[in-house]
Length: 112
Length: 112
Image (cartoon, rainbow over all chains, first blue to last red; front, side, top):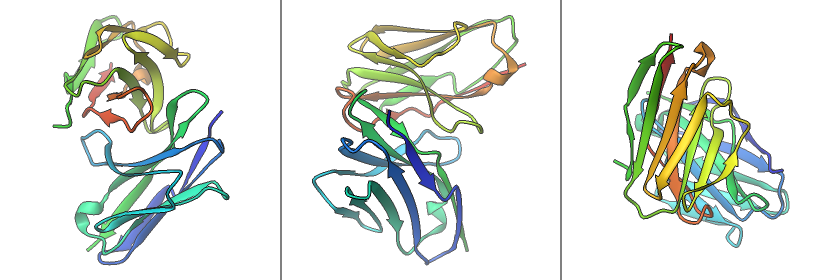
């Protein structure tokens, strides 16, 4: 089945710097890769997603890149702000079972 | 408000109690999910319902009993739980289980 590995598990960066979170997946047929942000006391919220026919997607300060050959995708946050502090989850759509498989999460802390 | 509403937000129950968690989605989606979130396993899929039919039971103990009376409502009936069942229980919905999920804010369950 599909397996998604996410790194790092914790990440601390200075406000204004960039943050990068990486995920690898095992199912080469996966074609949909969303990223979720979970703030304290809330459920995960979709922040950006990418499909396998695209290599990069941007939305203001966040971007996602996909390398299908290497089977990995990354979340990039530029000009980080305190409100970016949260737990971030990557996911990949497992085609065989038609369900999302989630990574283990990254706790991102932005230091003022 | 994401369009997926979970009640109650917090629940404390004894090991001999019976309680139910409720989830309602206002997005017109036809797939609904129950996830368990704990420190050990950040996002653990429990059940999947597609068009009101259960399509996945991820080896969940029988003390958890799901019910999906229609595509907009999902329940999780709880009985004779164990302290290790204490966790955040998240409901999510999607269209055709092929797209990104929309999560509710979760029910924080404590079993005493």
